[in-house]
Length: 229
Ligand code: SAM
Image (cartoon, rainbow, N blue to C red; front, side):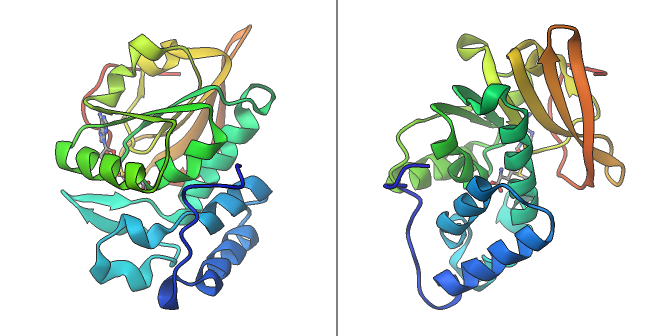
């Protein structure tokens, strides 16, 4: 992470360093062991990604509404997915990363300094616009935004060293697997509500390696050409 991280906007009161530190300690106690990930959670001002009326709850470890029936992900889940992606990425190098489901842009902000280039897709135009404005005003310079169906990936920018999906399809979208670079990994929740598993699918010389990381609960990924891994 760079010393001049654009996400480092320290706040006061409920958004203070002490409140954030409590969240970081909670995530560490819950099994997040990657120091880079914990530092990203510490640095990113989550209160700036939600409605002001909810700001006092920004550093609770819970998902919160962001409008349009969508949520900002629970910090534990953002940390878990980021950790899984860093551990799975080829030799820890993240050149091009694709994120599907920008939402309010919180996960995007956690990821951006860890990748050379980050590409992010959101299907709801108003969320996509707001996330782009927020992340641009926070000074992130290596993110490209797209409004559209993330199930198709971003063919013009493939292959990706890692892909992270923040909503759950019934089955893995084929295009996302096809757009993984050799050694690259796809972090994706899969399954119907109440039965979702977070998967890490890695493109190896022998084919796709499948690891099940944890039981999770995500909003559905809408759209979709899919395939069983
Ligand atoms: N990553 C966000 C964060 O930092 O908290 C939360 C994302 S929210 C849980 C999931 C997002 O995926 C929603 O904004 C939803 O509109 C979006 N989404 C669902 N299906 C999609 C699709 N096919 N393509 C792109 N975005 C999609």
